[in-house]
Length: 132
Image 1 (cartoon, helix red, strand yellow):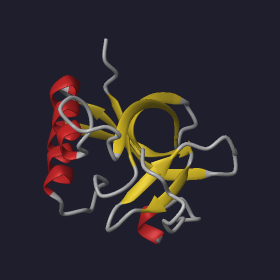
Image 2 (tube, rainbow, N blue to C red):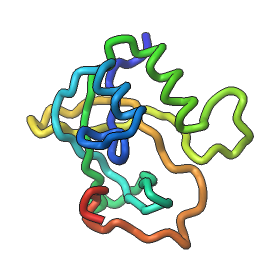
Image 3 (cartoon, rainbow, N blue to C red):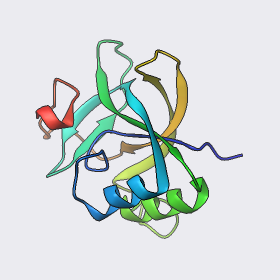
Image 4 (cartoon, rainbow, N blue to C red):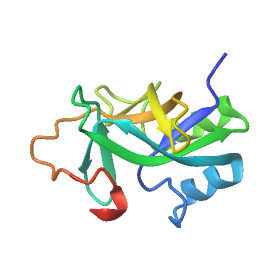
């Protein structure tokens, strides 16, 4: 069974006036603020999450429950240009990630991991896209 949880950390979060953020807000239930272990980079006008082994590296975002997970994830995969039909390596890959909501109950959720080199990208040290 496909997971119905999604962790977002950038332009898909609440408050963004992007069509895909609006689609997410219509098609999913916001659960809570959440965080994961990783590093956040400013790619262009949007961020990229890179996994990290350092527990001090934390990225903050939001956790959602998708009402129709398969269909919505297909739409989001198209938006993130990953999955079938896109040239490898794709800019993002969707994968499961351990996230911690504000209530502390660790959960597994889908997220989009940045898949291109980050050496020349600005690091968002706070882990919060809105504080870049």
